[in-house]
Structure formats: C-alpha cells, structure tokens
Length: 56
Image 1 (cartoon, rainbow, N blue to C red):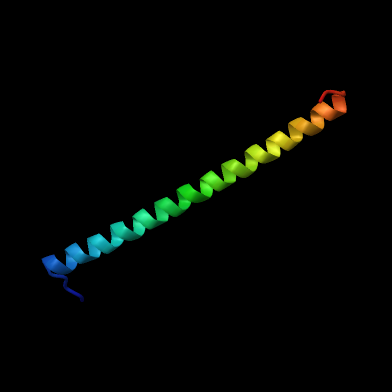
Image 2 (tube, rainbow, N blue to C red):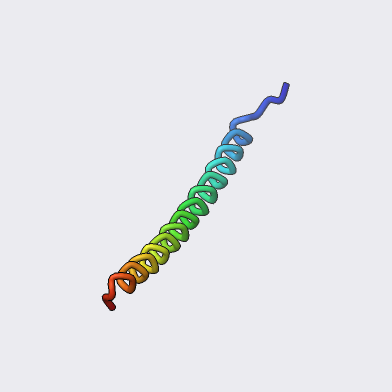
C-alpha cells in the first residue's frame, strides 16, 4: 500500500488539475477548428445551391 503525505497529495492534485486544464484547452481548440470547418462547408453548400438556382 502506498501512503501519500499532505505534500505528496497536494503535488498530485496540482498535476491532476494541470493535466485537466491542458485536456480542456485542447478539446476547446479542436471544437473551434471543427466549427470553422463546418461553417466553410456550409458556405460552400450555399454557393452551390445559389449557382444551381441561377443566383450569384
């Protein structure tokens, strides 16, 4: 059985939350990239639809 002292527990908590912060920021960055990609696809689809209807 491993016993952690108060300092060891604080260090573990700091490492845990630092990792969590990195994970959340990476996930947020990915979601922004996905949203940008979807909006570009949406714009392209609208352009195709307009050209199909004979509008510019």
